[in-house]
Length: 284
Image (cartoon, rainbow, N blue to C red; front, side, top):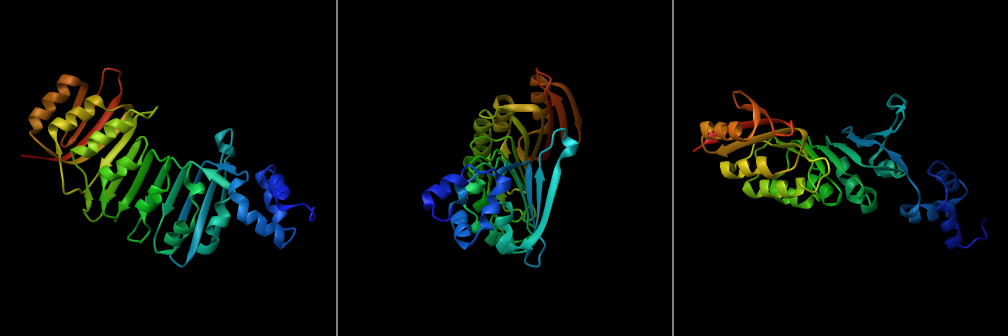
């Protein structure tokens, strides 16, 4: 096989199953270099979820959840490696569900050096910042298929409208701040309305906490009437301009089975879809 031209070697590797690919890297240095240079074109196995956990000592713990049918046959592959080796551990897999738990700075370099092709199929992105310098927005910007985004806790300065515009469709958007530098307004809800309609499943979660801005009652009403929702939806809005009594009248007029408890409202639409809505405060 050594006499084969590189083009033919690459063609062979493109047809090899993921579990067998690494065997070729054991042949010699030339095969290893050929594999590493061209591996974006090779087959990868499906993983249900991949989790990166920064241990704070320069090492990264990686959990790779492999699918099983029935569900109890799922397998979890766990590895702890230096940051420089993290991508080599996850390269053989493709996933739609990516979780990033960052406690120091090690994961920033991991994702800065990670090639775009590995992130292009991620549709669910969960980031737990914990005062690290991982760049959540930079990671999001390289995940063009994300429809569910969770940043909790969030230490980054975030404009929610800008985030929404990066997402082709929105099913979950949960941003819980620890420093009150998340901003959102009526333009945010307009973007969520538009992008929820592009989702087959509809909006499941919309939580934006600790924001210095607020929403108008007219836009919140439009949001509840025009967005596409899933069968169960949870919504948290920190502040809304207007009267609590007027808003409750609106809910009772357009929805059924309304139950209010403090700042929480539970109700159903005409299809029987269930809403859980929390409004932190009403302001004049």
